[in-house]
Length: 355
Image (cartoon, rainbow, N blue to C red; front, side, top):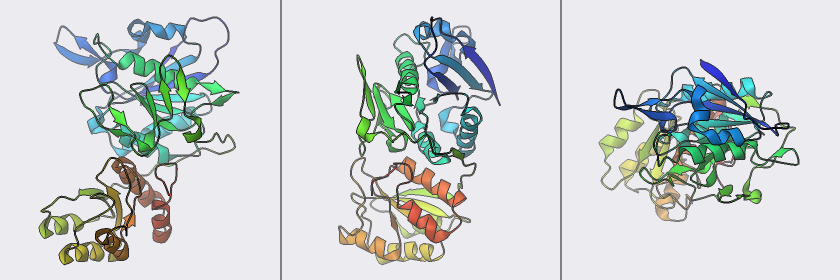
């Protein structure tokens, strides 16, 4: 499944902590192959040649490389579960974890892992790059080194960020609050509805009040199921009965994330509401999140959202689409009681939404 590479930075004295790096694929680990005129994955055995700054780190570093590297556009729930298993297998042996991941679906993976790793009290930091590590102007080195520094950071023997996060372009964000917003600039990720957890400048400044509390007494439980019988439906002016009926009529469909307007608004046409209500009566779970990057769903603020609440659509508050769909997959797979599932869906599980 993966191969392990042990890297020992050449520093005197005892290492202050240990970090396991999991390389899944993505832009960060690519170099230019002149012979074939293309980008190819580089060999992490040569990481010290590519990132010589690692020699000055004062913590133990081990890298595991997946046997089959994944372009993040091909990331699937099975891959999320495989990552969770790797963390479980190595949880007692390492103080923290860094996952190198393509940017396109990084927020989905971070959100999924936040649900799959129940009771986590060690850092799991995802990072990547907009430019490959083999390119002169690459952001890969800074993202990689600082992600490891944050993962290894401790105060009084406690990790600074005992949760799943994304580090990118000087900002540390809660993983299930982040969204990819840029494809051409280095500031690829933002968190509109939750403050950043740390900012890396000359020093790394931690936004302590917003970081998950350290709870070493909690026991790590790793879940190994996600239900993919779900769909995301963004509303748009002109959406018609045929589209709605086709989506709601998908065989085996169990859940839908409804991307509504503004603070949770949707059309009030009879055919639309009847279609949603009929689907809910059949057992479909509909989770309402906003198309806006900032703000939250407040069902009932306007008449157009009040009706949604009345027919049984569930409010996603300020959840991102990435967190909403992965939470829905997680609960559909792991919560057998329908009423308990609905209650858990509208309640924060691991900081993914506000009450």
